[in-house]
Length: 70
Image (tube, rainbow, N blue to C red; front, side, top):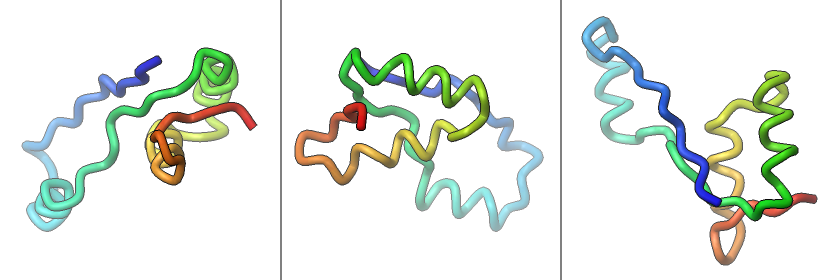
């Protein structure tokens, strides 16, 4: 399954230095997960235990770039 962040940040009010950092290294906005992992992801995001960017960066260490339950 594809998880995608739809959060949009208004860039007009950002500090120019921070804005440049966002352009040069944007935060991950998507990741893939097996269906068995979706419930845990939803629960963690709803409770605020983990934010979306932490989940989006997690599968980068996996060979096929897919997040699986532990």
